[in-house]
Amino acid sequence: MNIEGLDYNTQREQLLLPEYGREVQKMVDHAVALESKEERQRCAETIIAIMERMFPNSSSADDHRHKLWDHLALMSNFQLDIDWPCDVSQAAKITTRPEPMGYPMRDIPVRHYGNMIFELFEQLKTMPEGPERDELARLTANHMKRNLYQWSHGSADDEKVIADLARYTDGIIQLDPQKFVFEKINEREFTEKRKKKK
Image 1: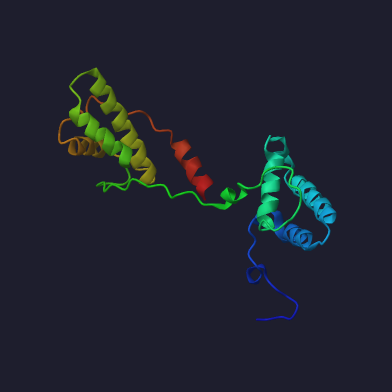
Image 2 (image 1 turned 30 degrees about the vertical axis):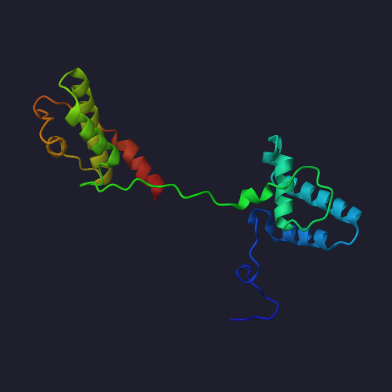
């Protein structure tokens, strides 16, 4: 549907720094087009004052004004011929995207326990018997139960956790279901998290 005189933002030129809006971009374009250097300078300082008022909470930062001048240089595509109060040669670095971070993808048998639990299983396999391994096994079992409770929507069977712990440690960690006591799970904590997500 084309209505004469009506255009949408999606049809307009994309803004380099959309946080300042299209009106500020128009002001910058106007400043670039001015013929007199004095007028361009005065216009640029006015634009900086407007940009500063748009984000008053940031004005306490030491490099805030320098950042605004960098933004002005970017928005003018470095075409604004004025006496810059600070060095804007590094402004282009603002728009460069960082390299994507590598995410460690490991194939784990059951995703609800997570990668960290499987690292603990490997550590438990190599630890010598003693109170330190017993404590790590206790912490691991309780964390497994919390994860199982969280991802199975409120059902966490003690025997399943004990069986999984034995299975994924190759039978090295054998908890006695009659003696081992799991920590109580605060059900409210999980229900509140679910409500927040909705």
